[in-house]
Image (cartoon, rainbow, N blue to C red; front, side, top):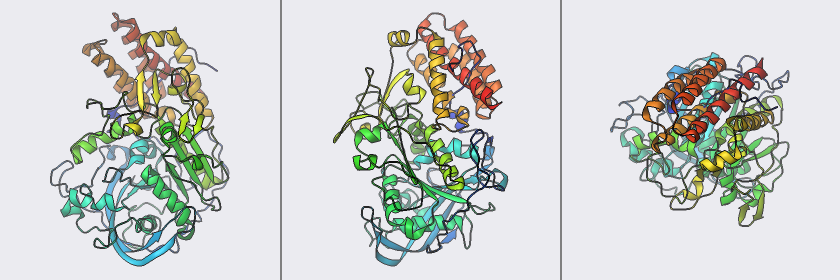
Length: 578
């Protein structure tokens, strides 16, 4: 039911919150009783024990935690590469790095067949980065093990950047695994970045292995070290995890698809796999659940092959596609950019303030990460209680080879998971773009003009009602996690909007500062779970916008649309939880 535009309403995300996350474990997965879905979800009475024993997987020798010999950002690089800038201590989390040493099997993988052995007893050394609750009470019993992406020729933890706020809020432990050669041995890899720190590591057997055939068993052993350590425990004093879910984006999704098809059956060390932004055809005879989430850009570019898209959902497979979303998006680039600048020396393409090289303004603003957050929670319920995730309609296409996405008169993709930011647009977000480098992966985001906005939403309330209804519908369908209103993206989107109007000379710096004062405080309250206080502060922000943005009604209404919708969304979510 649409929410009245006169109702006090709710919030969005900022870099301020990234550095001061507050852990409010609403619906967290309790260790003592076993993982359960978030508040508001149906909870079966029993929890299934894991059947992922990893009995045939060797235990590596774990060394660490590896000491930090310089401050983060120091040119001596005596700290973990891409060490997080999130204030983990404030959230009751710690970050530690470990080295793994052992001998692994080289595998050849092909299609959906079992992997074949190339060689055994191959020595290796690699690393893990662990971000985990500092104590048992905050741990939900689930480890997310990310296969680090190496497309840029260095380790990149895409899924951490996308979902870290939710993982922390819900009590997950996250482990990043450096499994591939490029991440360690390229000209920009770990060993070149810090010879003193990473010199002992090697996944090439002294340069004799020139492919990634060792990566699969290295990943298995990394997971084994986390779930059943024989010496140093990377999870410290936390109990052994009840479940381990592997995740990987893009190139890493492809590696994990190979792993799923060729290695998981024999290794049996994972409880489930999440493939984000790719992943090929999957075998259908395994009991291990696999969840595939792809953006519109993954469909349009062919990163998700047509044969993989054609695979129907099954008792062990779910595939979701998010309309308007891009392979690399605004959330990823704005979270990752400062760390890349610090440790590599340059911002990624599309980063705010950097030269824009794509044909259209790059980086979709569709918050696909919120859907990804729901994917992780659904996957836990799937393996822990046998609650299958909901299915979702695929994005509509007019042709499959090459893929062509069906669009409406604005250019918005049809069908798929349509979040409010796509279904009730303020911008035309697309998974497609053209230009050099990664433009084809970064998608685009073009603001609607004042005239277009006025025609679509004659009043602020018209936008509010439609946007809130679309968001609540997505939540009801299971495409958003139960705690979606606590995501900081609600606040940062409003902040980014105000910043854009300041840059255009339509809102003064003075007025922006008055709005930011309330926005920061609302963000702190909202992400901590205090919806009533966040709504009150956002109401004050709206009042200031009405009073102070007087010479440009279109700019005033632009701020009010988003602010009033956020207030209404918080209010509606609060009423539902009473």
